[in-house]
Amino acid sequence: MNVSIPNVKVEVHAPICSAAAEMCTPEALRFIGFLNNQFNDRRLALLSARESRSFEYDGGALPQYPLETAQTVRANNSWRCAPPPADIADRRVEITGPVDRKMVINGLNSGASTYMADFEDSSAPTWSVVTEGQRNLRDAVNGTISFTNPANGKVYAPRTDGKLATLLVRPRGWHLDESHVTVNNKVCSGSLFDFGIYFFHNVHNLVKKGSGTYFYLPKLEGYLEARLWNDVFVAAQDYLGVPRGTIRATILLETITAAFEMEEILYEIREHSIGLNCGRWDYIFSYIKKLKYHSDRITPDRAHLTMQSPFMEAYVKKLIHTCHKRGTFAMGGMAATIPIKNDPAANAKAMDDVKKDKLREVSAGHDGTWVAHPALVKIARDIFDKHMSSPNQISLVPVEGGEVTEEQLLELPKVPHGKAITSSGLKHGVEIVLAYSEAWLRGIGCIPLNHKMEDAATAEISRAQIWSWQYHGVQTQDDNQTITKERIKALVSHEVARQQAKKDARGRKWLLAGKLVADMLTKDKLDNFLTSVCYPHVLTTAYEGTTVPEEGWSKL
Ligand SMILES: CC(=O)SCCNC(=O)CCNC(=O)[C@H](O)C(C)(C)COP(=O)(O)OP(=O)(O)OC[C@H]1O[C@@H](n2cnc3c(N)ncnc32)[C@H](O)[C@@H]1OP(=O)(O)O
Ligand SMILES: O=CC(=O)O
Ligand SMILES: [Mg+2]
Image 1 (cartoon, helix red, strand yellow):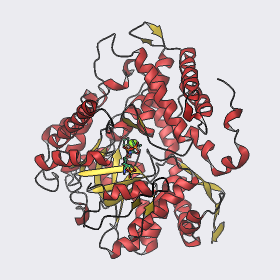
Image 2 (tube, protein in one colour):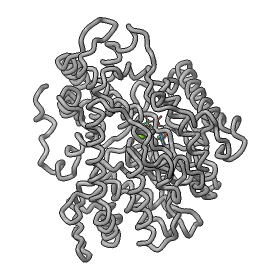
Image 3 (cartoon, helix red, strand yellow):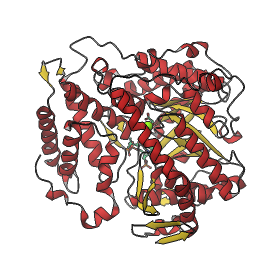
Image 4 (cartoon, protein in one colour):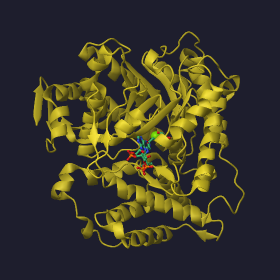
């Protein structure tokens, strides 16, 4: 399909399946062309700026509070973020999930205050996931969504008791492309595609209902990236003739660099802001990635990188202080625990851990929290109901968060030698990256593994830390064995063979995943994102023949 407006040519390089036909209408594609034409060059320049800044960290520099905004933004007490819209003033429990039709209905019906439909960490953006996901959201907004599960005949429809969750949408981050669409022969931005298609099809209906389009924006690395989103919002609202502020967005504070620019990020997006969220998993990943060459900042096993770690505590305090000082939401993050079926004792312990995590969040001053599974909604809600009697805690500004130093934002936990980096931590990490990548290559962006949810953010922690361990040649401390490339490759091969021997291996992508994962964990340079490495293998054109079939991947 091709669409042209003066000076802008938009082309779709994928089958026009029914979802694509409904979502990629000529008018919608014109809007996508308009957005890319205006903003894609800036996006690409900001991605290059990320590289330049990373290069400085690679050379030994550390992130710092920006000097240029000290007076104009941080010491300037005259600005606040816009007040929250009425239908989102209470967002104490937010459920998140991929955009398939059943999940969307289950998320909206879950009893959570909001449901975040996710095109990022829990989605593998195949053409069908992306276009069907958009159609599901349009139908959800129109109130026409329904689903019958072909496996068991169960019928799904939105609840009608007035307790439907408010819809939020997370488009892909600035680093991801939508390669099935080009604008003037350049690949379309994944962020602009996801944002633009949702906004185009839904904003007028939502405005008619007295609501707006609400977003979560992932993986920003600094305030100029927030400025770009703000400019996109202004242009989009003007293009479709809706008032400024119809779009509202929570920015995920989930990179170490952004932690040094929280106030600046809010400032840039203040007219459209509904706060910041502690995206804890990507935040840990970003710490490891950005400081990967710093031999004094090698991280211990993932299990030690908890919310009680000094750098995580400092980040939470600073985020709550900053958001409340500027009159907006400070949202908590995701406990990755999911219910443990068939083991009541283990499940009770897991749920108790979730309760503790949510109690820590509400006591620290967060205004709401995330859950990954409907069974956790009530647990989180009960804790917030007990400890938060008002719709949110925005009016409380905890003083201590204003004092957080640069070094505190970077301080790792001290784990006794012998326990910090272990052979089981290494093996478990390899299994996570492999299992997640394998699922992703089949279009599944979030999986249950060992009673935890694993998504792009959690898997990235394992990928980045295993890479850094081999780069620094550290030893696993329980057996004093060095983590070499060969050791990692052997672990990957062993796990691929183990998985392939299972009954359900047919149709799986273990060989391809094994090849990609072994490369990612051992190559000389750490890849920026696992999803960018895997993306060429899920393109629809690739499925149609240009990719090597699974059987064609030789043994590692
Ligand atoms: C770091 C971050 O970015 S966190 C945010 C991104 N990650 C997420 O959003 C995780 C979302 N969670 C999930 O995808 C799923 O819970 C998984 C993959 C972890 C587990 O899924 P499953 O194994 O299918 O869970 P389970 O079988 O227990 O599900 C039971 C029911 O709950 C539903 N369900 C599970 N999780 C969700 C969810 N997050 N939203 C809506 N419904 C859900 C299932 O669809 C299923 O419905 P059904 O009974 O009607 O068939
Ligand atoms: O997106 C959330 C995170 O923790 O990462
Ligand atoms: Mg994230």
